[in-house]
Image (cartoon, rainbow, N blue to C red; front, side):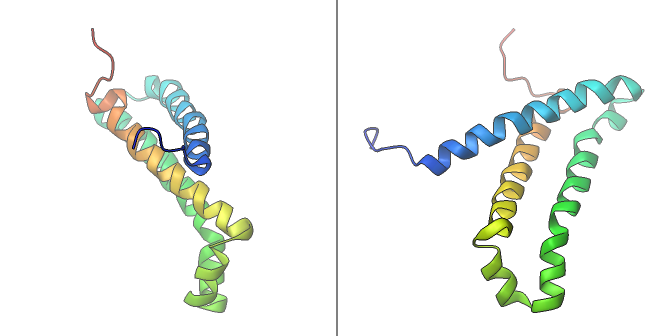
Length: 112
C-alpha cells in the first residue's frame, strides 16, 4: 500500500491548498488587530469564505436557472466550470481547515 504511486491530481490539490491557506492566514493576521473581541475576530475567515463561495457559485446558479440541473451537472464535470468546481471545493476545504486551526479556535498545531 505504501508503494502505490501518488495520484497527480491529489498533489495538485495540496499545491493549490497551501497558497489558499497562506492567504487565509495573511488575511486573518491583517484584519484581526482591527477587531477588539475574540468573537469578532472569529468571523474574519467566515466572511472571506462566504463572500468568495457566493461569488464562485454565480455561474452555477445562472446555468441551473437557465438550463436545469442535468446540463449544469454535465458542465460542472469539465471545461472552465469543472475547474471552478474543483477550485471551489479545495477553497472551501481549506477554509474549514483554516477555521479549525486559526488562532481564534484555540487549537495549536505546534508544540510549545
